[in-house]
Length: 630
Image (cartoon, rainbow, N blue to C red; front, side, top):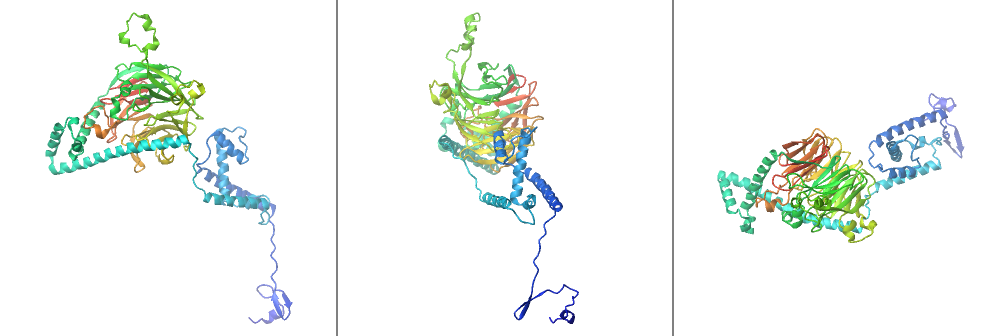
């Protein structure tokens, strides 16, 4: 634009002052003055740093509330603090305060790494926006760690050879059982659809025909294989199952207290009964010898065996001071596994150990009915009075805190334990103690334990444990209200269930294979569907915490319902015990209450089911008594 006269004379205009001109040859170009950067005053910098520190504290608190990977064990917390250059313990701190301090430190690191707060302002040496060498190293390190996090992958530890062999065995064992179970379930479902279709077509005449078929094929041995697989035969099985279920429910509703015994000097805290995985094994010599054996453990640390077939619950054997402290869990090996003549008992105690015990017939046993009443020699023969001998064969040591529960794998070769150290462990029964060492006289080797797996993953104390009927899965519960399901064949977490308001103390897989029951402090029983991985039913069962759950036995639903054997309970009911002083029985078809058993004067600590007609229930309580309901 042409210059005005005033501009030509060097008089300032209303805008900016004229720029100085530089002469370079024949042309002139304006020069721009260099910008000067002024440092912040000490007061302003201090205020900015205080504001940034306040924002950092707020972001740290938000992030700390969402952290889930904070170490829980004391030695892990200590190592994490030392790696960050922080003191292990400050004056007046307890374990919870130390872990909270570590949580805040980890959250602060994440906030700084993600750039939620300006790092430069927080450094005291920042002047005029320049970053010192140390601060640049910190930022560069954070960027590198952020890149590492983005490329991070899940890593697994190498399994031992023993664990690999155990997983191979479990996979083979579970696949066979699941194949048989799914085949039976498929046949029954097809039969159910066939029954509905026939009932619609033929009406009431079909039931007459079914009764005729039942009468004609009443003898199982005279039925041909092809006839057994026919649609009419499957429908007949369903009719027998329904009739058996109605008869069983009628028996349960009329249950009453039949026998009671004082089981210990202190409270009875754990109870277990012998079980068989198949009907064929029920007739074996071992199954007949250990049929309906009841094992109890108490706060005195003693173990006792009782005869569930007797009216008075006859005492079969006693092992005093089996543990140095209270016994919290007890389990009996399935009857169709292990040694031909001996059975194995597992116990878990708060003395940080679990133990395996061999149950063997007492060769010196003398039947008390054959003794003379005036024979002092026989009366003083305490060894001859016990029908079984309880011999310690292995110590299972490794947990860092008190043990809570113990359970046998359906194969009988493995034992699982839970503990307050937030872990559960898998042990090899056949390679532990004197079972795997034969006649070894070395005490250290004789009672050594073979730990196959140490599995963490619970952020609270782990308590309940239960194995799937196929042997492929195991469920563990914790005080955080979580039910975790693990795949034993791969070692991975299969799924987890959330829904309990308080601690979960027990879990039990249903014999049908696709449902799991859990219970705890909130007094409710929750049924979870493993197929859909969601809650199936919620039962407001008790007014106080529930201590134990047990499903009815189920040996072989498909192959034995046609026989009309009344001892097979087909998993038709679920028993529960509670601190409210009652034990209850629930229908697994509609989850309605069948019976409530009152008899204990205090808390009911445990419950289990006996084989046989009607499914007898046994309970133990805080009142030191063992009771049987028939």
